[in-house]
Length: 235
Image 1: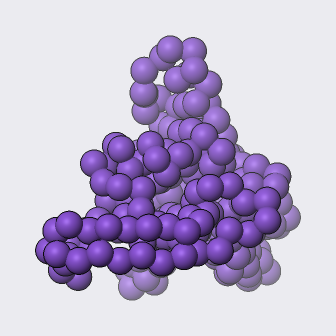
Image 2: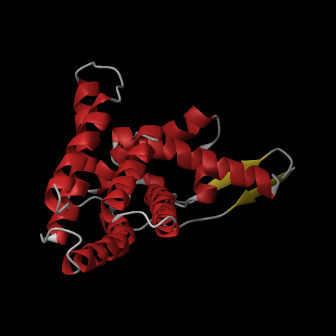
């Protein structure tokens, strides 16, 4: 059994979620590193669901703690503020997305996959992640809003991926294997389509329509048709 107390300064203008004069009194045995790691992952999962549905402003650390059956101070032990929690959620989601895309690129190189097949595989893996974790789209929608607390961080993650995809597409266009077009504009259109799925799902939810995969499947098909007509010389 042990008791600890520490103070975290509260910057001017910050809300109480930042964690001022946080006191933690533990009346149980110290947690193992594995238990702390599991708790951290559970907090990240719950935060992703909340940020992806209620948004940043609508997410409360008190509510997250209550839903997980832990104390708010436990969340602040792992993440010193709600903003830092959002940063951690963005980092994890961006890492998952980047890893999935890297796997597609590696597989397409190893089996000599054609250019259009590679584009199609990348689109499908993004939407497969969306189907498996629909709140991820909600998070993308939230951090894509102008002035969003997570906008800069997600942009820092996405820009290297976008730049790599743009360079590859431009090389393929120069070689005549893809139809010439504005690669940057095409990628932004694709990103807007993915984020648009989250908006459509949210509108349906607000209208009382239960969760459905139909918008995701339809938007994926529309995006693939758009990309094929824009890039495939034989289309």
